[in-house]
Structures are given as structure tokens and as C-alpha cells.
Amino acid sequence: MADHRQGSRRRGQGELEALVLSALTEADGPATAGWVQERLGGDLAYTTVITILTRLLAKGAVTRERAGRSFAWTPASDQAGLAAHRMRKVLDAESDREAVLASFVTGLDPDDERLLRDLLGQSGGAGRSPGEGEV
Image 1 (cartoon, one colour):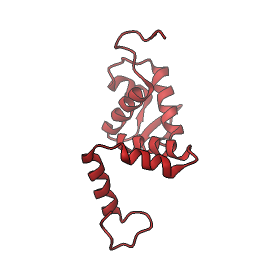
Image 2 (image 1 turned 90 degrees about the horizontal axis):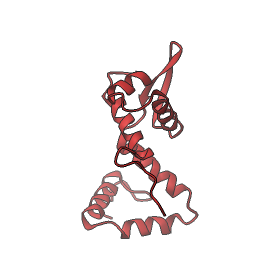
Image 3 (image 1 turned 120 degrees about the vertical axis):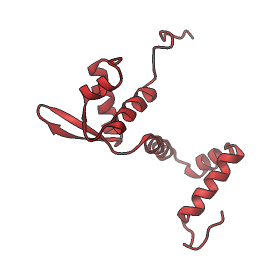
Image 4 (image 1 turned 180 degrees about the vertical axis):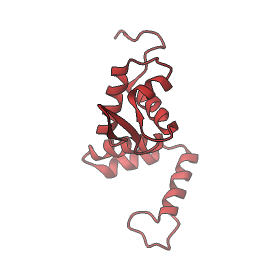
């Protein structure tokens, strides 16, 4: 199957969302789409920035408020939060959550598995007593 992408200039939706979200997190407060476009060097069309912001809004990654005739946008979470939201969305779409989680965990490299175990221990883990820290 032929790849119709135009060199390295073509970016995927996830990369564009990350760029826009990153620009928003650098703002001192709510930012307009024009500000985001400027911050990204004018590389993206204004309509593309609006489309990306609207997708991020639908995903719960940004919020917006009226600012005159347009909107001002604020990140609801950082890039890690957005990635976590996507992971939960994938998990929610599957009928066998246990199988998906088991497959995910067994596919982790040892360092990531250790990190996950540490994080679960810190949070108390689901269904465990507050004093239990070992997984």
C-alpha cells in the first residue's frame, strides 16, 4: 500500500494535538487560537488550530470560555493527562478489561513494570486496604 504522506512535514493528529496542548500550557492564562497559531510559528493554518482545539475540547483536554467574538482556551490537563485519557478510552471500548490489562502489563519492559507497581503501591491500588503497599 502506498504512503501518501508528503515527506516529514506531514504530522499525525496526536502530534498536532500535543503541539497545541504544549503551547497552551505555556500561556499565562486562557489563550486564543490566534495566539496558539502564532506561538507555533504560524506553521499551521488558523482553521487547523481551531479543529485541533475542538478535538481537544471533545476529549476533555481543554476548556474554553467566550472572549469577545471568539474563544479563549485553557488546558484541562497536561500531555500526560491527555495520554492517560486516551488509554482509558481504549480500555473502556474493550469488553474484556482484565485480558487487555493483563496483556498490557505482561508487555511492559521490567523498568516500566516496576514503575507501575510503585505507582499502584503509592495510590493504595484498587480494592486494597489503605495500609497495603506491596503489589
